[in-house]
Amino acid sequence: MKLRSQEAWNDDKFHDECGVFGVYAPGEDVARLTYFGLHALQHRGQESAGIAVADGVSILVYKDLGLVPQVFSERTIASLTGHIAVGHVRYSTTGSTRWENAQPVHKDCGGRSIVLAHNGNLINAHELRAELEKEGRVFTSTSDSEVMASLIALNANGSGIEGSIIKAMERLKGAYSALVATEEKLYAMRDPNGIRPLALGRLKKGWAISSETCGLDIVGAEYVRDVEPGELLVIDTSGPISIKAFEPARRALCIFEYVYFARPDSRLRDQLIYRARRAMGRFLAAEAPAGVDLIIGVPDSGTPAAIGFAEGAGIPFGEGLIKNRYVGRTFIEPSQTIRQLGVRMKLNPLSEVIKGRKLALVDDSIVRGTTSKKIVAMLKKAGAAEIHMRISSPPVAWPCFYGIDTANRNELIASSKSVYEIAEFIGADTLNYLSLDGLIKATGGSKDTFCSACFDGDYPLPVPRDVQLAKFMLEEGARK
Ligand code: AMP
Image (cartoon, rainbow, N blue to C red; front, side, top):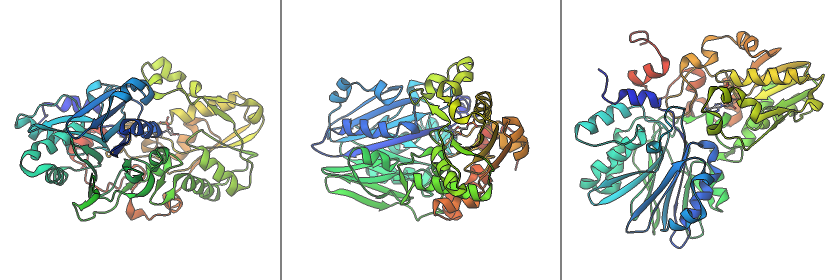
C-alpha cells in the first residue's frame, strides 16, 4: 500500500549529504563560530544553510537556500545571540530544493522547543512518519530529519529530553549523526553503526561538535575524540556527559568519506584523509601501473591520489587541469544546457602541460561516468597523446541508502558495464580501479569496520523493501 506521503518522499529520493556543527560556549559568539564551522563544512552541502541559537530562555532559527556566506550577513549573525548554537549545511538532488527542507528543524514540545540538525539518511522514515501522522503530527517538509525531530518532541513530555532522545534512537534505523539543542543544553548523537562521522572538540570556553575535524580546526577547537557509535553526549555547563545509549553494533563508517566526501585535511579514526588518499594512489600505481610520461589528477578530489600515484610510479606529477573553485553545484544544476557546460565551467585544461604527452589521469571515483567522459574528451582536444584513467576506489555499482548521493542503480555506470566497456564509454585508452582491499589498506582499517556497500553491495543494515524499490527502480517481485 502506498503511504499518503510516499510520492513526496520518492521525489525527495532520500539524498541528504550534509554537514552539522554545534557549539556550547557561554561568553562566546556561538553563532559566529558556527558560521565559520559551517563554512569549513561547505563541501558537505551547498543547497541550504542554517543556524539555531539558544540563550537559556528561547531558541531562534535562521535558515535559507544558498551557500553559507549567501545565507548569513554580518547583521544576521550579530542578531543570533545565545550560548548554544546548532548549524547545518545541506545538499540534495534537484527536485527537492525547498526552503522547508532546510535545517535546523524546529519542533515545539510541551511549552519548550527543540532544534535538530542531521547528517545521514534514515531507512525507516516512511514507516515512522506514517505512524506519527496517524497520531496527528503535522509535517511541513519531506525530510527524514523532521521525522526524527518529531519523534523526539513526541516523547519529550513524559521522559525529559535525554530520555526522549534515547527512546527515539531505539526507533531510528539508518544513518544519523545529529545535533539537538533545547533552550538549555546541546546534545550530540550517532547511530549505533557510526555510519557518518561526528567529532568532539574543546574550545577555551566550551565545546564544539563537527561533522569533520576541519570544522574544529577553523574555530580553534582542539579535537578530543569522535562521538562513539550509539553514544549520546549531553553538553551543558558541567561539560559533556556520555550516555552509552546502545551496545556498539557492527561498526560501519562510510568508506566513501575517505574516497571523496570528507575534506583531505580532516581526520577520521586518527588518520588524516589526505594521507589515506595518497596511499590509495600509491597502491593504485602498484596494482595498475601505466607507461606514461606524466601523472595528472582531477582537482580537487583526485589530487592527493594523483600525487600518491606519481610517488608510487616514480613518474612526475603535473597540473593538467585548472579548477575554477567558485563555480558551485547549485549554480550549475538548474538547466540541462548549463549542466552540459558544467565540467567546462569548472575545469580548464593546460594544453602547454599536456600536449603530446601520455597521461595517467587520476580521479577518486566514477559514479555515472559523465564527468570522466567530458574530461577525457577535453584533454584529447587539448592535445593529450594517450589517456590512461586510474580511479582510486573500486567501481561504484550499488546505491547508497545511508546518505551519499550515488544515484539510482540504473544510473551507476558500473552496475551494468564492465571495466572495459566503461573505458570505451569514457574514451580512455585504458582504465583501472583500485581494489577494495587496496582501498581498505589505505585507510588503515579493516573491512568489518566499514560500510563499503556502494562497492560490494554488502549493506550493514537491512534496507526496507520500499526504500530499495525507489532506488533500484525495480518492479515489485524482481528482487528478494
Ligand atoms: P560522474 O561519474 O559523472 O557521476 O562523476 C563522478 C565524479 O563526481 C567523481 O570524480 C567525484 O569527484 C564526484 N563525486 C563522487 N561522488 C559524488 C557525490 N555523491 N556527489 C557529488 N559528486 C560526487
